[in-house]
Length: 338
Image 1 (cartoon, rainbow, N blue to C red):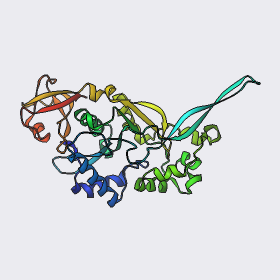
Image 2 (cartoon, rainbow, N blue to C red):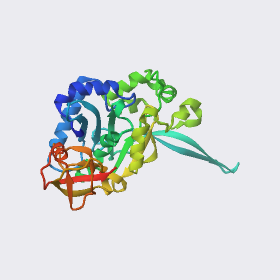
Image 3 (cartoon, rainbow, N blue to C red):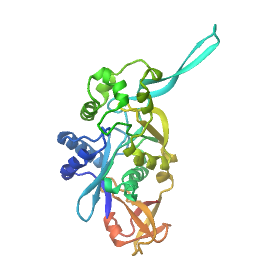
Image 4 (tube, one colour):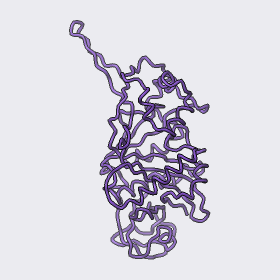
């Protein structure tokens, strides 16, 4: 049985393996022991903070096989973007020029550096072992974060965003980076991505052009990257779109991948999830699969289990599921049907 839980310091060796396999462009995951250790300790402090309120907390989850202790994935929530430093993006919108004498008005698409998305909750660090791609476990790793937000809404913003990794070649080359960022950093995409992962994107924004970039002046290959999703990131994007996320006018600084956004009260796992008291009741294993979680902070657990009957005021859970969720009969569980 696989369950999503808060990260622990003892997970560090296995996290190194996950980060080595992560998709290029996932700058919130980096194969660096010191950086990962800080991320784990920051996450533990966030889960341990009892007072409610939005701040710079990050909640880092790992996907564990409860039988073997093996980690098979991870995901993360940053409670508030722009809390410690501005959260920079590129805004894609037309620049309109006009001439009264010629009776011409023309809009030219441009990219402008901005931090409009400050104050949002950011879903990031989604990674899954390849053999689990396309299975319900991918929904567990992604959507369980929304059950956690539903259980603790006071800790998060009223809307969420997620940056989807943009296109790069198998050789690790990004046409968008080569057309834009390369001119200001003199670094290949792979190296720039690593530097940003280790040091944050603030230094990047300081060196980026402060004036609008006229999209038609870029190469066609770079233009084609704007809003384009890396093929390996398609599943992560589709899960969020099915939840209720929509593309925005914002794209990533590095690879021009799209940014998705939604208000929490529009997200399926939040508005359709229901809370019920539990009882111990063996299940046939043939029922409809449900995404289930407890309502805790430091001891949060989420998993997928088949239920013979949809939850009402009371829901019967197999004893093994109760144990995996760290629940005793009578405690509440939150669930949403897959």
